[in-house]
Image 1 (cartoon, rainbow, N blue to C red):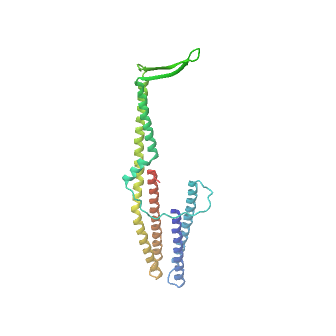
Image 2: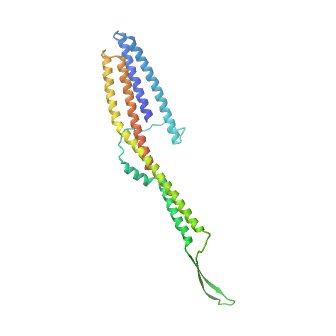
Image 3: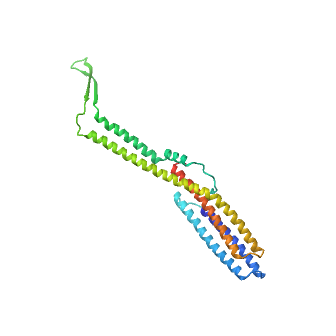
Length: 276
């Protein structure tokens, strides 16, 4: 979308420089402007056409990259809905962090591993406790019918006296594994905090730039109309028109960049929060 909008800006610039060239030729033919104006207008138009070619190629590359990201390298021609317009994403930093800690699958995974490790510790500690086992059977026996029958029952209580410190080592190993998981979880939480904070700051930065960039476009359009009007009435010069047109093109590009940065920051924040 950014590449397509930049291509459109370049196309508009070509059209405006084409009109300026026709104006310069008209003034030169009636003798009110020098040949320099025509030559400069032709140079400006050529540069604008070169920029349009570059912008068109950038759009083609963006489409190729998108197709590759979707895994459809031979995709048929299609159109993309342009939703690059600004729509404020309402969320606080605290709310973003809460969602991230709650929804991130990597945090859920390591939390589940910690719970399993804690269960392993309790299981290993059972090696210190006595073990009670029991058995029961109902038997039929004898050489003649009817056979004798009855129950046999028994119980055994085992006390661990010495196991070669195996239980102690198993408990220590389970505790060590839990400590590793705790350290990994803390490291993960810090990485998540950094990801969310960076995305949130980028979101706010782009949000603040968008109104300023939009206002700059309006002022640049007014300045271009004034410069073009002055030249059309014969009191301006071609340098004013060129400068105004370049400023307008740069202002539009900066505005598109701010919109793009906002969308990317929003997507990055949603990814960091693992929310859809």
